[in-house]
Each structure stands twice: as C-alpha cells, then as structure tokens.
Image: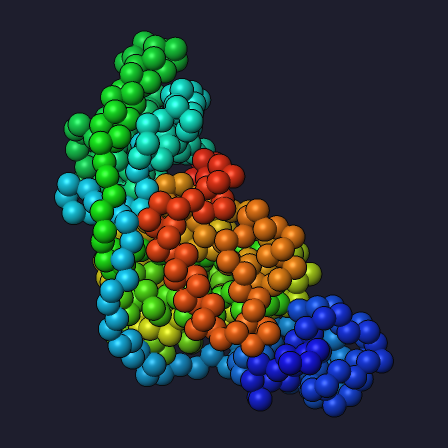
Length: 499
C-alpha cells in the first residue's frame, strides 16, 4: 500500500501510514514532505490557497487558514473549520438493506417477551444522598458469591435528584434515564433506594415512567427504614431474595433481531474513520439486515457530517428532527460561550484529527449505510427497528448511559487512542483502530480493525465485529467485563442549574 493512504481521488490530503520525515517523498505524493508528519496525520497532496476548501473522504474537513503547499503537514496550524460542503437532498440514500436471516444468540427472555444479553440485579438511586447505602447493599454481593446465571449486583449512583425544582429539566432527564434502566431487559429485577425528602420522589418518577412497584421492582427509603445501617440491612435482605429468583433464569436461542446496539467512539485518532468506524458500520448494516437495531448518538460529533445522515433520512419528519437537535446544540454552545469545533480533544488532535468536521465524518461511519428511521431524545425509549439517532452530548459515559436507558442491550465502542470504557448492564465491545493499540492494550481491546490497512476488506472486519456481538450477547465476557469495568460509568445528562 505504500507509506501514505489516499482515501478518495478528490482528497487534498493523504494520511501517513508511518512517520514521514521532512524531505522524504513517499510513493503517492508529488512533492517531498516539508515537515515531519506523524503516523495518522495529514500531508498535502496538492497546494491549497489561503481560504480554499480542504477535503478528506471526498468531503470538506475545513478551510485553509493560510496557504498550503504540496508536502505540507496539514493540521491545526493551517486548517480551520468552515460551514461549506454540507448540502443535502433528504432521503436520496435511504435504501433499505436486503433482508438476512439465521443469525442467533443465547439471550435472556423476560416473561413479557423482552430479550436481554445479561442477567443483573440493579440497585438504582433516586438521589445522591442514597448513593452510599446503595453501594453498601451491592457490595454485600461480590460476583464470586453469586450463583451461576446471575451476572452481578450493581449500584447506579449519580450526583442529582435534588438541589433544584422538582419540575426542572435535569430531574425530568434523570427520571427518564432511571425509568429506562428500571425496565431494561438486562436486569432481572431492581431495588430503588431513596432518602425520602428529595426532589426526585420515587412514586413520582415511577408514575412518570409508567412503572409500578412489584416483585421485581422494589423500593426503599432511608428515612422510612430508620437510618443508614437499617436501610443497608433491609436492602441487603431484599436483594438476597431477588438474587435467588434471578438464579432460576436460563438463556434461550433467539434471533439477532433482538439485539439493540449502542454505537460509541472515544479517544479517536486519524485511523478511526478509516478502519474501526467504517468496519463497525459494516457490522451495523449486517445487524439491520437481520432485523436488529442500532443507535448512533453524540450530537456534537455529527456536526459537519449531518448531511450524510440527512441523505439517509427515512422521511422529512426524521430529517427535521435531526436538524432541530443540531440547532439546539448550536444555541446551547453559544449560550455557554463555547464552539462546537472545540470538541476534538487533545488526544484526538495528537492522533491526527484537526476539526470537528473531520472527526464527525469519521464518527458517522459507525452507522453504516442503512436508512435513518428515527430521531429520539436522550434516554427516550427506542421506537423503530433499524438505525435510530439518540440525542446526547459527545461525552462517552453520558451518551452510553442514555443509549442504555433507551434500550441498548449491547455497546460497541471504537477507539484509536485507547479508551478503557465499559458499561453495565450492557456489555461493551472495544474495537481498536490501529495495530499498535490492539497489541499494546490487548487486555482492553476485543477486536483489531487495523487489518483494513493491509488489505482486509471492511466487510470481513465488520463480520468479525458482528460475530463478537453475537458471542458477547450470548454471555461471553467482553474485555471490559473481565476487568470489572462498568460500575462507575452511569452518568445521566445534567443540563440545567442547581438552585
């Protein structure tokens, strides 16, 4: 393949496959490199005048902030964000995939027909004030002490639930998120622990979420229990009963159509949009063809690539919903004196990504090529099969929390720099974008997507990811699960102020 990669004939830049020293002229470049270009970074194939548009993936990734000569390293010193190149004809690429069948996994079928990939007991908290009690209850049931078939007892604590109006946007979002977890099929049962005087009253959020207490949804408040120690004792006794019942559950063979996969990327690099993300997109296309569902999220990280999703919108209504969420985020950033282009993190920049446009074009590749069937709010229940978009911040734990609340029973997370994210109750599969990461952090990475750079097709790597989805959904631990990661990644979105 040589030492540089040209992704599209229209591109003004090539990507360095290894470190290029100033003065070298790798095959594929017409001029010698005018500066050192690190692996994964961009080198100019041709000159671009100051103010001219710069393309990668055949798409605009920015505007030259100063003249760029052939062989120049193209990065933050000479490339800035632009609004150009994002025109879209709604729905022109909304072509459903040819149906596939036959893919199955060993799922956990609940009495009402919902299908999970794990069999947890969850200890939810209505307010930060009940966090310690919830954790002490969960800590009484270490994994090694649990009977076969019970994946764990996990406490989900947070910083909210009080300090503001009971009708505030944060309480509304928190209630919706908690309700999504309470009804999630990866839980056999739930214990909710509250303080008793908080704004987020348990009866209120249960009613707002259409939930009722019963044999698999128990509640407890510290004040009614008589204090901290008594609440821990009472909660431990309740969970002991729930664990005994959960141990009777057995997995069954079910169709892959029952998979709901949350799509995440974090710690991205210059290869994420070339290997891991498009390979995950190929796996998503296969999943959707099998009747399954996937959720793309992180709204600030589609800014600059939204035209690609609008072209796949199943209807004008879906397109309008997506545009409305992007408009909200633009206003939100303005109100907080921020720019959407400040999203590329220091790690992203070091890995070769320069603008949010470039990052978003790579991030959207995770969603594959199938129609975008719906746009939902943060933690709202999933309504449509196939691909949906769930509004969320670009912060991975917060976004994944919303996806799980919306019904994701599996997470697939791509990374180029080495994110170590894990999630409970939905297991997280990690996909490495490059071979160095896959080898160096092999204890965290489930799939190596780097063979794409040596000629393996995206479809073949996508099939590998899809096979891992089915295996992990059947109960095989992901790398993050084997490390015990996922207890602290419950991060509900907090939008408003505390009063």
